[in-house]
Every structure is written in structure tokens, then in C-alpha cells.
Image 1 (cartoon, rainbow, N blue to C red):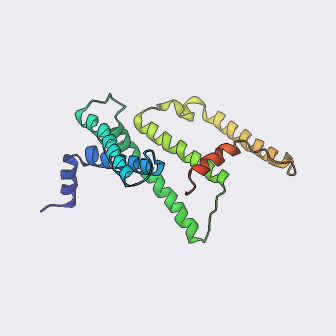
Image 2: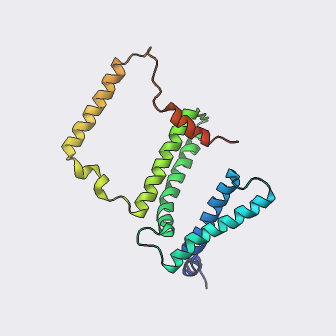
Image 3: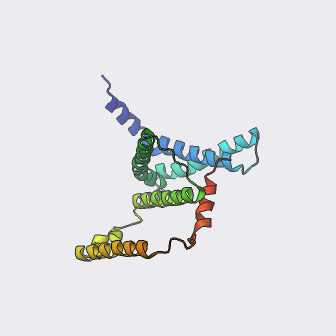
Length: 194
């Protein structure tokens, strides 16, 4: 009797996670970008070009992986397979936050600056997840290896007191300076519906 575990093992032996899923993922993302960017113009004929180009991009990534032509640590399929579970966990966490906000009746409307900042932070998080999955970062980013726990505690205390002093002594009537406002507005404009 075939079980679900047997079916998954059979699909895996046929190359589901090494060939089929990465190809469809790359094809779908490339096709969506080409459709949205209108590189070849708009119309039914350009859709055909977009399908062909997306298929070629998917195959160009997957075929060298299957043949073992990528150098160690730079295989895009291995990087995708290592990074996507972390991104899926992050996506589930974001959806849970939105579900909880919706449960309590919160309606979030972000201005361009806030949405741009959130998009920028998301880019950094996703870039770090993919970089860590590719092995680009080693243990040099661990703070506990650079600074002793006593020094860490001292830095946290100094930081908290600095924030408290700044909050108390700031001039609330002074016009705030918008450092990076244009940058975050530009990122926010990228995600506006057209």
C-alpha cells in the first residue's frame, strides 16, 4: 500500500525539489516581471516572447544544476532550496501579525515613507536569508564573539539612557529633519498599484 511518504520520496527521486519546483519558481517570477515591465511592449505577441524568455531563464538555471556545472556554494538551486524555508517562516509570521491586527479591527494605512521603510527592511531581511543560505556570511557577524557579555550590557544601558535623555531634551516644536525621506518614498512608490 502506497503512503503519502512513499509518494513524496518517489517524487523527490524523480527530481521534484531539484528540477521541477525551482524551474517553476524561476519561470513564474521571470514571467511576472516580464509581464509587468512590458519590455517587448504590450499585447498577445509579447506574452509569447515573455513565455519563451521565462522558459529559457528557468532552464538556464536548472540544467547546469542537474549536470553539476556550478561551483560549490554558487548553485542557485541549492541557494533557493536552502533559503525558501526561512522565507516561508517569515511570510507565515507576517501573515500571523496581519491576522492578529485584523482580529482586533486594526486597519493599517501606511504613507509612502513608512511603506518604503518596511519594503527596505524586507529587502535586507530577504537578502540576509539568501546570503546566509548561500554561505556568504560566517560567524564574524555574531556579536557575542566580538564583545564580552559585560560590555554588551554596558552598551545596552548606555544606549537606553541616551535615548531617554534625547527624548527628554529634544525640542518638540522644531521641525523634524526628514533624513532619507525621498529614498523611502521612492521605494514605497515602487510598490504602488498602477
